[in-house]
Length: 283
Image (cartoon, rainbow, N blue to C red; front, side, top):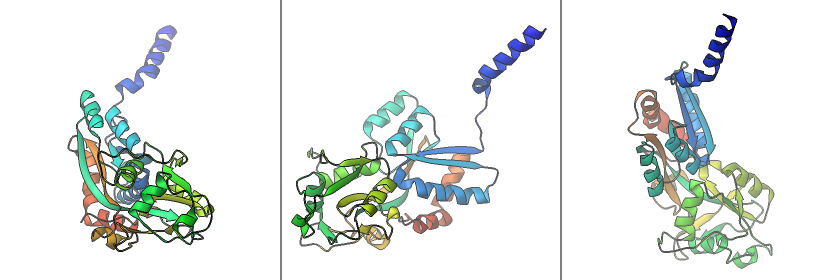
């Protein structure tokens, strides 16, 4: 009898995860570090209003979020880029149908130390800096210091966007890459911290991360164009040249709690949170 009870307990212990039902009162969200503060702000406000429901938000990069969605380990992926064709193909192989929802807009800020006298750059100068063709600040009217290039790592949607739209100037035939000397950092906050402490550094991240410890550089499309700072009004009116949409992805059109949460995000209250976290609302 004792042996039978012991055997039953072992079976219950090892097979409990198999028989456990999915918790319909919780959502797992993973992905874009650019969006993680925004996602957490949405989740906090939503849970205040719905205390029996739980929303967990973690970063790791857009690629990480989309991989988690494809593998079934999250309910919503946050992404600061469009899903790639190869990701869609992999998803279909696993029975996942990615469904895209645009939830906000973002201006990508290029930042330097407040101690750096350089305050404006053209798009061409940016490309030359980050590909390693301009290596000293004195070439741009700054001090005689070697430029320290900071970038997000390759799994980041911000990295992909910056490479395609700044380094490659939206040319699908271009093969420009970041300078081999660029420091690849794991998060937008890591870039913010490094820029704050290094007068020779230059980096980029979503404008929601800008603080008084960094200086956002004004950007012009070319030498004849207006230099524009990353600000909400400049993203809305299209003047700021480095801006992008932000997305959520689900497996097929969302239902249940996931749909309820996304409805909140797209509501007037949810879009107000977008503004409060220094992003640009879509409504």
